[in-house]
Image (tube, rainbow, N blue to C red):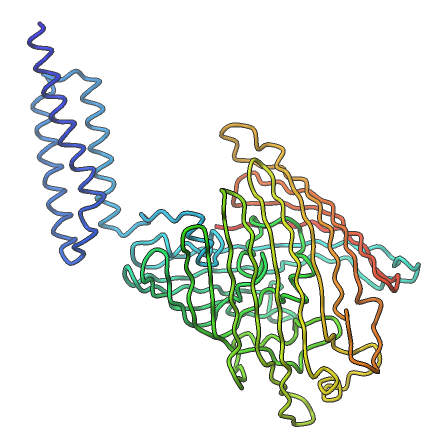
Length: 466
């Protein structure tokens, strides 16, 4: 009896060793020889078939429980081989790698593919409720509305281990037929991956500034509406044509691009948003530069900053001009996301030269002047009440945000500041995610300004990503 048990153990050990070898082969066999991949797959399938026959002939000698375990391991190997055959996803992309590429979870889908097409996306529907009066007691003139803000489709194609294409197509406000919606390319670029930590990129790129311009999927930030600072000073979503690098070194992530700049004729007293060229027949006098650095010294803790500088051209005005407006934007940010906490702080400032001349060209007088300096920042905190539950996929996160923005912190001599541009926004709300890919957000925003004409509002958002 003892001899028989020892023989069975020897047989089991040998079979387990063979299975382990083939698991390793299925995982690593193709790393260095992509040309012979199909031959390798055929060889593995033949070996699996032979092993199955061996198991069938030994089923009287091996205990049934052990036999089932070996069969399970063989099935795992067979599934891995099938993935290799079909080209299914098989690359694990860590969050640090995704962030170094400047892409949200869904936007990074193509980077998890071995080869072929990737399809992903997200969308947001927003209900906004306004009071009848402003803080001053005058009619607000605002009407409640519900808007399918955007439906996004990410389409990518991985040509091989080095080259890939990635893009984001946005459909705004549900229709282009109503005069308010449009279809836009948010980004579209070719990446050449020198290695896992360094990528060359060219095309229509997202500007790597702030928290939201690159990472704007609804389930990765708190709030039904995006912060004002990251709308009028960092004009999210902001993209331009250019090329550069994205990479990381240890705990440091970095991105840097040369690209076309703003059209200064679109600058307003309310901010820089309408100055974006968005890659459409963009005028280029001299290239602008943007760079970003983030440091992650501990899991969940990140701090960094970004800088944009270049000449903003002036075109599309009734008076022809060769005026350029030097434009600088800088921002610093800190984030802590761990143990259920979601804490953020951001400060941004923009500085413009030749604003007096610009005002003359665009016809801005009095308190309609474009700001020579624009400032904004916010503090934000949220906590997931279900974070301490094991294996809990749901989340319930109350949040709070305090924000101050002034798009006319300074104006040229002879012009006036509009006190309505000096705003303070308090946001109180909560979000619920039944699963990671779906989120419902509700919040109330108390909007104050120095002119006492702020209009508060209640927001309700439904968002998804895949």
